[in-house]
Length: 449
Image 1 (cartoon, rainbow, N blue to C red):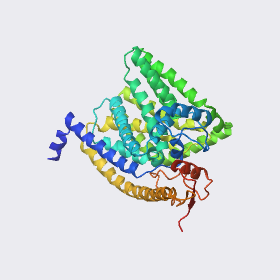
Image 2 (cartoon, rainbow, N blue to C red):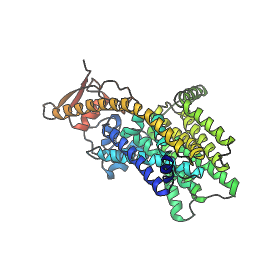
Image 3 (cartoon, helix red, strand yellow):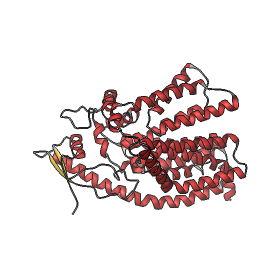
C-alpha cells in the first residue's frame, strides 16, 4: 500500500503538489519567526535618510525616492553595500514590519527553490519532494547565526537577500541564454548587483561563473558573451563597492602576512567547528557516488566548482578586519549546493530512503525549534513591553522612557543575540537612535532585579 502511494507520487503533478506543501510549511514557519522578531540595532538607523553614523536634529523619514540620496551618503560615510542597504531601507519606510515579514519569508522559500534548482539542473535529475525538506533542514541547522542573517531586517538584507542575487546570477549564466541586446543588458545588471552584493560571497559567485565558462570553453570551444558582460560588470560593481570612502575609513587594516595567517587559522578553526559533520557527510557521499559511477563528468566538475566557491568565499575574509559568523552565509550556501548535487545523484530515484531520512531529521528539527522559539518569544515579549513604555512616555513632560534591558539570549536563532540593544546610559548609541525612531526625548535602560 505504501509502495503504491509512493509510486503515485512519482508523477509530475503529484510531485509538484507535495513540493508546494513543503514550501508552504516552510513559509509558515518563517512567518511565525519573523512575526516574533521586532526591530533591533541598525534597523532604527535605516528608518531615516542616512547622513552620518550619528543622530542629527532634523532627520527625514526614508521613502523609496530618497533611498538613492541616502545610499550616496551611506557610501561616502559608512560602507559600500548600497545594494543590500537599499533593500533594508525600502522595508524600513513602512510603519508595519508585516510587509518585511511576508517578503522575507518568501525570499527564504526562494532560497530553498534555488538550491533545489541548482541540484536538479547540475545532476540532471528530476526534483524529488522528499529531498526538498532536507534542503530546508540543512539551511536551518547550518546557516550561521540564523537570527542575525535571516530574521534581523538589516542582517537579512545583507545576507539572505543578497544570496538570491548572486545565486540568481550563477543560475542565469548556467542557462547559457542566447546572445541579444536584452539578455546582455540583463546579464550586465545582474552581474553588477552580484559584484556589489558583498565583499566575499559576490566575488566567489563570479569565480564559480568563470569556472563554468572555462569548462564550457574546454568542452565546446564556446564563450557566451552574455556571461562575459556579466563578469565585466560584476567587477565594476565589486570595485565600486570596495572603493567606498566609508569602507576605506572603517576597514583600514594593516594586512601584514602575520595578520592574514592568523585570520586564515581562525577561519579554518571556525569552519571545522561549525561544519565538520557536513564535510564528513560530503566526503562519504562524494566517494560513494564516484565508486558507484553515479556522478557524470559534468556533475563532478559542478561539485568541484561550488566547493571551490565555498572555500573562496570563506577565506576571502582573511583580508577583512573581522569575520563574524554571519559573513559565512554565502560560503555555506555554495557548500549546500555541492552537497545536494551529490544527494540527487544518489537518491533522486528513491522515495522511501529520502522520506525516512526527512522524518528522522524532522524530529531533530522539532527539538531544535522548540527552545529557539521559546527564546525568541521571550525577547519578543520584552521588546513589546519596551515599546509600550516608550509609547507611554510620549504623554509625559519631558518625554523620557525607562525600559527593562533584555535578558541575555541563548539561541542563535534569536536576532537579538549578538546585536546592539538598549543600554542603561540614555546617551548610548542605540538609546539615542531608538529615541529618534520613537520621537521621545530620551530612553534609559535598567536591568531586571
